[in-house]
Structures are given as structure tokens and as C-alpha cells.
Image 1 (tube, rainbow, N blue to C red):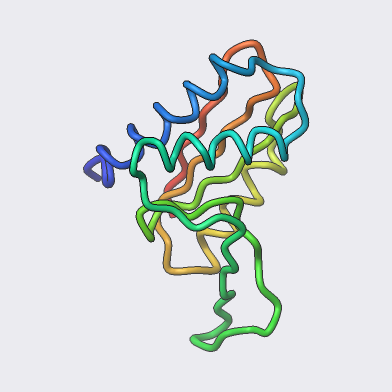
Image 2: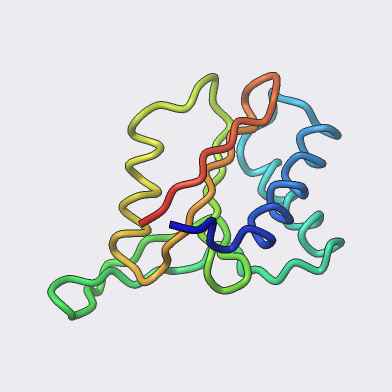
Amino acid sequence: MPFIYKDETYRIIGAAQEVHKELGSGFLEPVYQEALRLELEDRDIPFKQKQELQIRYKERFLEKRYIADFVCFGKIIVELKAVDKLIAVHEAQLLNYLNATSHRIGLLLNFGQASLAIKRLIS
């Protein structure tokens, strides 16, 4: 499978790396969310923050919604964490978002480590 949305994901990751370079680790997730919002704006990356995601069930939509930290370019879910280490439940959360929606690519970004941790997940 080709690397879909390669340019878009690189741009998002570049913005996240800039945020981590400026702030380092140690802040709570809302601080990184706000800083990433500013960085995405500065780089003209289209996004929606706190985007509601409809959950599909047997070709119907449920009333319950997921809330993604960001959806960039209208097609890439970006989920932020500020934890010591990413664990399976963090990946499962993003995979659930992808599997329950029409989105195919997700980025899991963890600002809580010495270096920005990045996981690119495909549905």
C-alpha cells in the first residue's frame, strides 16, 4: 500500500515537532493542543479542532460521537497525548476513531516524552 497523504502528514508532523521544540515535555495536553492550533494556523494547514466524529454501525450512524483533537485536511485524525509513554490503549482509541468513521489515516502524537513520539495508523 502506498504511503497515502504523505505530504499532508509530513506537514502536520513538522508543526508538532516545532511545538515540542518550543515547549518540550511536561505540560498538560491542553497546552499542546492550543500551541498546535497556533502552529497549524501559522503553516496554513486546514484543520478543525475538537471535531465531532460520527460513529458508523451497520451502515447507520449512532447518536454517540467521538471528539477528535484535530482533523486536518478534512481527512487525517490527529490525537494528542502528554504522557510518559504511549500504550496500547492510546493506539486503540485512535484505531477506533478510524474504524468507526470514513477516515483512513490517523496520527498519534505524544508530547510527554523527551522527543516527540509519533505513531501513524492506517484503517
